[in-house]
Length: 231
Image: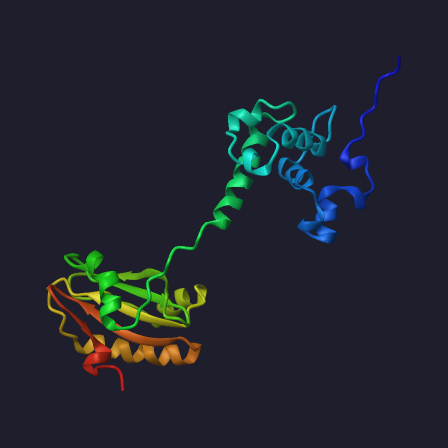
């Protein structure tokens, strides 16, 4: 009796291969087994990747039950192994995370809102830290980035560093904030000057500087509310 030859995926016409079909027609044109076959990459000498995943799905009945299986459980299935099982578990976990509700982003409606977000982590610092709150069009905080750490009395900052991070985050507006290790929140002349520079740079790149906060202890100062550096 002659040796049985197994047809591999590579032996199939391109229009029948899962990866090529995905590229041509999109993921919705593929079966669940074909999508999983792309994840594991290759089958065995006796079965294609699609065959392996068809059998795997048949054993677990539904994709939901498959997603509850551990790497060890999947690795024990014929044609899988630990590396392929890990890929399947990772892919299913990504799908699960995609369905998780997005965490609420803090919304900044006032200087007090912004201060409430940053103040707990900035009070008591022994050096000046200059941070940027990046906001979207709804004034939700996209990210908070530290752009400079200075000495006891100043944190040198350049507008380029502030707006480089804001552009990277696709921010619509920013609020800058720094602390005074002395505990006083009184703005210095340099604080007002850098505020004016940042406002001018923001106009050039289309990102509005909404405020500049100085964190002291126990209070803070909004330069916009104080009318310093803002019209």
